[in-house]
Each structure stands twice: as structure tokens, then as C-alpha cells.
Image 1: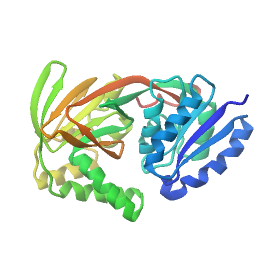
Image 2: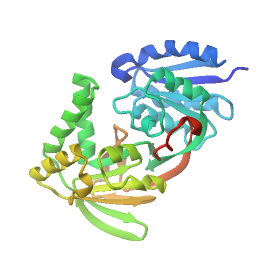
Image 3: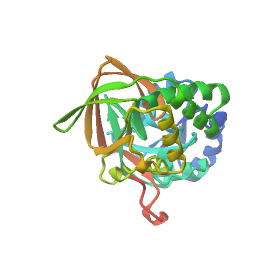
Length: 310
């Protein structure tokens, strides 16, 4: 019996090109003696169910489950696959593709699909917040609001990088409230006022932002970034420092590494952004790193000039 490639593909990814990908992959499957099983997702409600079906079919076999789409689609499929004996692979077809790029997965979708069938499975770290995994970041406050505003803009103007960047900048300048939270890390409890808490799990994104916590990834820890209460002029400075990659010098950002933390908010439920997707979560928020939680197909070491960015 031939192994199967379970392709979970977001039809709306890649500015609507996602629905045309499956046909291009069939020749590769034929060449490598795989059977292609397609799960074409047209709406978010289908993604969780179809991901679970694909993972159950692939458990304890030589099959591979392939998430084709942006980081949000990849996160949803990883939610079904993590901690299980199943090979997981990605074909990046989103706006920024941080997860795939950090692990040296080709951005060319045909090369990425071929890698999914020929690469080597290796353990990859995830983040976890109240039972939901994230592959890039989790956030609440101003950054989560920016994600929500961004979705409104991309639904209107398309999922282009320029639309995302402009929408995010405008959102940062809009009116926002401070969060008052109790932050527990280890045995240390602090009460903090902040417009934003950001938990990073991707060294590439953190390096692109020039934040000085990318080293957390090498220790299999999460990178926590909290913004101090700031004025609009200070927001302008932070945005400019982000553009010119000098955020490591920004005094209004508190950063540290953590393997776990608990956030108690004053509101019983909060909007939380996970890899660009908005969810409602109840307080407290239990957050932890999950080293080696995902059995991901990656390039062989011989084909790499450097290690994956953990």
C-alpha cells in the first residue's frame, strides 16, 4: 500500500491561488509513489474538523499531513498534530511565512511539497496558551487589536504585505486601553500596566523586529515582550526603530525569556491573537513552551548551510 500525502489546503491563501495548488502536486506524488488525499478548506469552520480527520488517518503510518497556507492555517493543523506520532509538513502560501522560513522550508510551493515527501522528520518547538498551540506568537492588548484591524483591512483590500503594514501602523496610533495584569513567572508575581503583551516563538520574526530576545529560542524558551504605557510620539519612535531595526535600544519595551508564565487579567475573557488569528480566551492565561512537540518534516542537514532558527 502506497503512503498517503494528506494535503490540507486553504483555498484563500496566496491571494486566492490556494485552490489551484493541488493539481500541481499530483505529478510529484506520482513520481514519488504517494497517494494524494486532498482536504480543500473554504471556510475557517472546516479547518479544525478536516485537520483532525487527516491526522487520525495518518497516525502510526508512513503518511504525511501537509498544511498548505499561511501561518494561521499551519497553526490550526499543528493543533491537531502536536504530541502525536504523525509526520507534519508545510507548504507556505501566506503573507510572511515566518514559520516555514525559520525552518528552511522553501517558499516555492512545488519545492516545499517535494520536501514534505522526501525530508527528514525532526522535533520542533511550539508554544501553548490555554490549550491552544501557536507556532509564531501569541499576544493580547494593542498587538491583538492590530491583528483584528488588519483582518478587516485585508478582507477589503487583499492579503498583501503593504496592506498589512499600513493597517498595523494605523492601529497602533488609534485609541487603546491599558491592560492591568498580574504576571506570574516561576515564583515571582508582578502587577503590570501595559498596552501590549507579546509572546514570541519564532527567532526569524524576532530578529526582523531587532528585538534582543531571539536568543530565547536557542534555549527552547519563549520570548516575552511587554510595552510600557506610552504616548503617541513614543509610538512613532518605536515604529521607526522597528523599521530601522534598532528596537533592542527601546527603553519602553521590557523583554525576558520564560519557559512558562501565567497572566491574570482584570477582564474575565480577552481577545488573544495566535499566529494572526483572533480568539477569545478566559483569564488566567496559562502559557508554556513545548519543546519537540511537533514531528515536522525538514530539509536534511546536508542540504542546509545553517541550522534551522529554533
